[in-house]
View 1 (cartoon, rainbow, N blue to C red):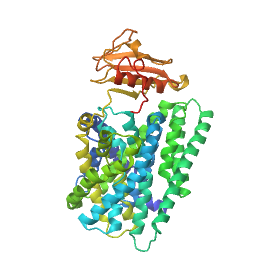
View 2 (view 1 turned 45 degrees about the vertical axis):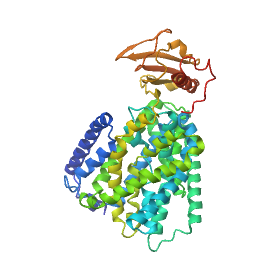
View 3 (view 1 turned 90 degrees about the vertical axis):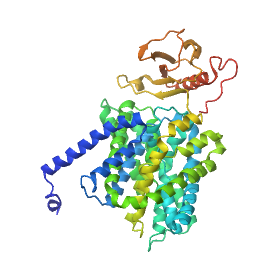
View 4 (view 1 turned 135 degrees about the vertical axis):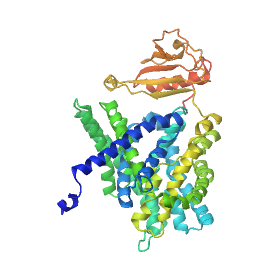
Length: 511
């Protein structure tokens, strides 16, 4: 039986498959550079590759929604693992509570709003309407950040976007499965209160499993770390996959377990930190490329046209009513200004998750739901473009652009984790009050120092009396213990000028 299953596939066929795959990967890598310059999210390009390779282009006939869902879940595990491993706890610590509320209460508000409008405007049954609302609710921070690479945002906003994208996949998946079962004859998911309790238990259980496995195996990996950064990186990623598998087999949320296991591992100051981060990012990129190309292959251009108008209607409801309502219900309690709430409402870009979840009704057997995949595909494609291009302009108009932008910098040539050190890159914006400040006037904490300034493309080592100018790029070397204080100090001077901390007490860093 094994022989009959493989006898039709020869080494010559393998060469053809590898040729196409390699060309797609190379084209995808080249597309990233174009996307960075144009502000176009990479997911649009990758979906386009899939459509070009499909039945309307190269003629590849792919209609297996079950396989798409399985491979989609596998890709999402790697994407969530990379998200957790590359996220600094310090950057999302203050955003965890608002992001958690936005990922639970906000999700329910969004689903309810979209469901009501889908029922009233498109005439769909209530269960199907809420099912569609749940499918399109999940956001994708990767899509947002691909648009905003050149527009630095405050840590307060990026923290919410990062944490929300990591948190909201899990409750959305549970909600979609429950609603798909409710709309399928012969399946009885139970009363709503039981589903709510079950979902809460699965989320809490998955979170505990992810945190526990991340902490336990992180300690074990740290003790048994060898000299091979490659093997160590494989081990770290394997723990995040283990968290998903263990949580799923125990009937809890595997997605939240994966993200939190990665978050714990990424903040344990493990050896070979830069190698782990680079390896997980490579896997994350590979998963994104493969997933979006696969989803493009599954889509049929002949069917998409019929869903353009419904997709625009649902997308407008989601963008202009549902997302702002979910933000308004979740974030004012945490002191977010109306400008921040307005930007977060617009920045709720959709990515791979809604398109993958659109296959769930097909695999569950929910009748008359084939149109959902086509509608969601069109919605994600169209509204990613609609929201992406004006987003940098909206960020500037709302005044949420950070003028002293500090980012992590990978330095692979130096084992910084062994020195308990970190390297940060600082960009001085056009209106930053760092302009005109001498390096010594920064009054950085002990253990932190500006080691290099790049100005007009030329780098030099600054002196204590060197004056910082607009447009400068500064390299800041700091110990891990002083990292947070150094970032807060730089932002305070950027906000209040050289007298920050002298004329008035240093304000807490809420951005």
